[in-house]
Length: 312
Image (tube, rainbow, N blue to C red; front, side, top):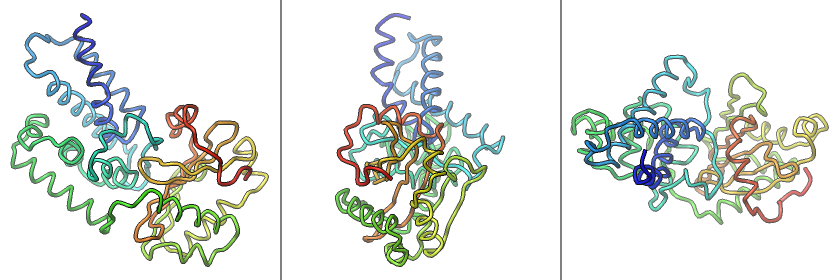
């Protein structure tokens, strides 16, 4: 392959990776899809490709759709038993992020909600909301009609909006203050304060420190408060599992504040928060090493500042 063809692909690699991540919710799978797209580009008769960007977008989108359909067929991503791979602020896979819709489409909350959509609905929604493709362009990418594209996007927007319960964009500084206060209540044993800081419809989900075979879910404020209080209570067993006494930082993960537990510059777990109306609406806890690989790599280049708790 000539250098010009390689350069053309590399110029669009970041956009393809961002698209693939939104479709798959996994950075590792997104990277594989982009690499497979490169192999297709390498083998293609590029002289007959009139619009390389459109061609590459179509290829990576359909490779992602194949992965989603295959995973669903194998029941690897049953709704309710899967969490997206979290990404640290500044990760290029999170782009584009100029508009609220673009930022929301990569939030852990929306990535999780999109699991309820069909693969084609998910693709149409992402192409429209995050990348501003026209319905004519989406129709060409997905081999459907413009009318079908409009219907898929409309259904996806409606379902996401219904599940989001009117959640809008939150000022990062305000969200951080709420999380800091919530963490202080959790580590001090103030269960009543935790309950008061949760929305009436709050939810929590955890991978059980990476040990549970299925996700653990909590759906009442009292149960969530008990789970949080127990989860943030340090014990010798938890420290052995973590490999030491973690420092707790607050950082942005997929655009939302998260408590990040770090031992010797190694991320051992995160709890990501969704804040709404001045309260905590949802928590997602992840500690499985395989889901934190890319975030861990990014943490080595990150400057987190002083931890909120230096030795948990």
